Image (cartoon, rainbow, N blue to C red; front, side, top):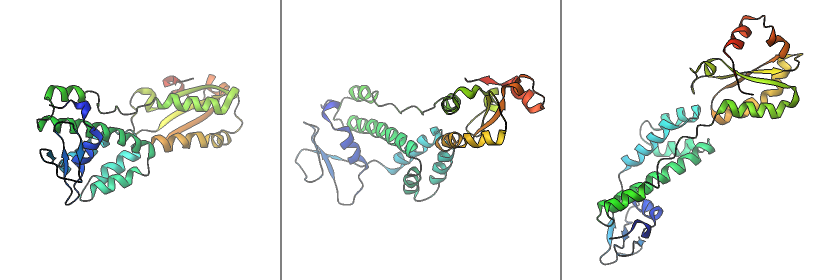
Length: 244
């Protein structure tokens, strides 16, 4: 019996996914070495995995994607013939999500390789199971988006910033990737809310593009928040959650 550490799992995963016509991979049951350039006597043929397993990987990954636009496009890519090609092409537009996919696929392929070794009788099932525990599916990268945006606003505005307050559905706990992230940006003084908002465009757009969630900010003077007269501002102050 082989020990899992004797086998190059990345290479075995490649062999299991290789459906090139007239190419056959083999593994040495004594050393764990792999080859596709010869037919060694006594070696075990590596049978490629079915495409349904790769498709299920893509579907499972897409279900956990936090980037709203990427999730929508990946889900659409999975429908119909050519799903593998469309899925791959879609990821090129979202580098951060693509990196997450590579980590996810690597974990899945290594666990699949270990399962194949156990099924082929080359590794003890218990040893394969222990080794597979080292390759769990990566957890979705759920950052605290409101806190990250608030920190960038603080760096951008400096001493002019008094508070950043979370309002709207995210403040009430009902927000999701389908909801806009609404922030009340309290400044020491505001002459023109539109001018202030224009100065924040770059920060807001950066996080909107990166997260896929629309990030909105409403500049308001500290004095106006202390004695709110507009109904929306009264409601906002009542429900607000302070971020900074």
